[in-house]
Amino acid sequence: MYQRRSNIQDIFLMFVDSICVTAGLIIANYIRHGSFFGMPRDDMRFSILWVMCIGIFFVYNLMFRVNKDFYVRGPFHELLIVFCNNLVIFVGVTVILYFIKRSESSSRLMLILFIVVDTLLMELVHQVIKLLLPGVYQRFLDRTRILLVADKKHAADAVRDVKAYEDFSQELIGMVIPDDRLTGDMEGVPVVSDIDHLAEYCKTASLDEVVISIDEHDKDVLDKMLPVMEDLAQMGIIIHYTITLPDLKGARHKMLLSRGNMYTVTYANKITSMGQIVVKRIMDLLGGIVGCVITCILFIVLGPIIKIQSPGPVFFSQKRVGRNGRIFNMYKFRSMYADAEKRKAELMEKNEMNGLMFKIEKDPRITPIGRFMRKTSLDEFPQFYNILTGDMSLVGTRPPTLDEFNKYSFSHKKRLSFRPGLTGMWQVSGRNEITDFDEIVRLDVEYIDNWNLLLDIKILLKTIGVVFKGK
Image (cartoon, rainbow, N blue to C red):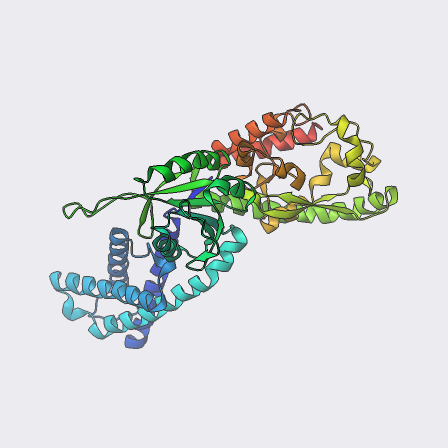
């Protein structure tokens, strides 16, 4: 799934800046007149002046998208942008006052003070946001891991372009040079594979997106890349394919997704906005907090019973594969005897699943309390901790074990292009009756392709019903 950059970030910054404009005007008025909102009798009312400043600010920012490159601007560049923003407000207010013949009834010193105060205030707030935002982003959302594929001719320039565009939300993990056997690194980026082994590398790598920058006139390289791109698409990996656009003096504006100086056509199975992703994460956090509280209560009740029936830890931890190959520890209340993993090999011939998953109806490794917990899904509650930490979501696709993942085909990996979930499409579609792994994959892919917040809510409501019915 491709997470499209949305205007919600620009809106947030405009909201913060409008607060700065208001605060700057109040402080400037206090310095000039000794009052936060009061003005001399003959002067223009504070509220009217504020409406002018805010109105000019919004018009200017909406027309020119002042903060479109906010996250990659340096401190001095930021200061220049902020000063210009306030200078436009000053000039705009001055012009309006002149035309309505009220220029003599407003303090020019106050407006100059406003420029100084608001420039300093806005610069400070912007730098604080840039300081805090990477940590907040990484706590709520994963960094995007990018692989660059570029021919030898364009490799160095492509690396510099991607790095210039890279911010706290992205990480360039490596590159591939299709027409060369070069090893080592290029511009400080490691060369991780050649074109013949690229698909296999991507199959096992922790990777989100691939940026391809090759000469479209090099037929040999293009013929090799097309089948590899088909394999990447099957895996659910997002592909950015660079295209060369001519510059026309009479038509300088181009409407296309860009990465620095490269224009790309982006292929993805699902495109969504940052706003929906943030709302989904907020739902996960709220659900995770409530679930962890319930888990603590269940631990007090179930913990002693689990230990009495089978000596060993109360919680079961297992390495699972999350979104696009990320490895994490998934937690459950232990529902099996301590030697369950060792006994799994001798029970493989009784596996009732067709495919890569393992499941038997009357598993002898399950303890009596474990059977009750599985029937009521109480064993799943510790996964709310995984949801809280961001490894999982309330709704998603189920994370496979390492053994299952190592046997995945290209099409199977597509189910990992979404954050794994506590519940999902196949769990509410009769999880006990489905015995074909490919059917599970089909349902998971259907969920990914059709995802929206309403679908998540629908699945959550269905899950409640399924759990209470013991299905």
